[in-house]
Length: 415
Image (tube, rainbow, N blue to C red; front, top):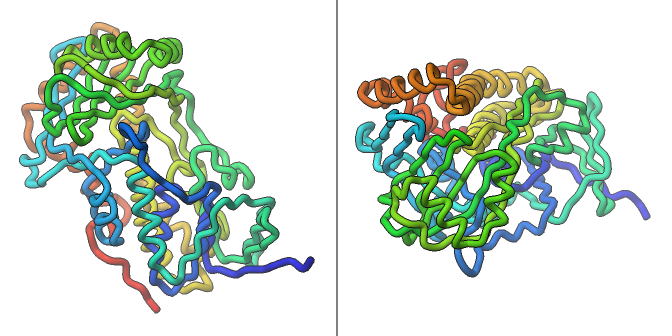
């Protein structure tokens, strides 16, 4: 049987939220794109309740989805805005309250189930003639030469391409196959996730209490449900996931100081180990990494997927500004790497520092962090700068601006 060879300018390996968004960003362009999805590409919502994995989509990420024509598909399913954020320290009096009205925005962001986002992305992908999606697809081998990159698939096809983009998650086979090293560490923490209903209304507010064992977040969902992310020690996480529903609801109500009254209902629970890492290289000749394949951070500020979407906006802009025959060249790809490393490193440091700051019970440190929180809450310009950074709305230090998609501007196709 003869080998079947397919050609494309770009192959994106990984069809999750980040990979599918990148494919949409390259839709209707001068570039031919193949998106390889290991799964079925079917993303549905549960018949009852909510999906356990949700994302806090910032205003900058919303602009990306709006510009790509994906946002209507998200809105038509289900989303929940959050207009305020309330953060406090369980070990003291430190409190910070963020209000979208203070910076002239209607919302701070939206809490959206991951499958809602991905379903809307695949719906949008079906409208692009230059994008081919191959589902249930696995690679057998990948090779890169000066002329092109080649992917041998288990279905017998071979794809010849100018550029491979690894969007295949934190355990990226692309990153591992090419021995791209990472620096980072495990946090020895597990995020317990579920959804709950509370006695009192969540007020379209994202609530977060820093406990000695780790942060506990209540994120608003429709119909007065909330998504829970409880970061804690692995042994405690195992205990929480094995409790009866009533015992868990009681423990959660107590840990949250009954801020929203009693927790009266909960969904199934799952735990996910937490770690931080960043790839030492985002690019190599004919290869680029995006999203969790390039970096993974603690979820305490909900920035993980937003960092990946910012990768998409930056890389798509770089690629669309280049001729198809040079998109795999290092002088093109290094611009993306410089752009994203500079933009994300300060956030990596800030999130890790926050995790460590709130992870100690040293009396002097507790006093400093509580004093700092209360002081920040009283200084409007500082607080507003912080919230705008969290919303992805501050300029990049290398480019001096946000990517066009993050500004709500379309990419310029040079065709």
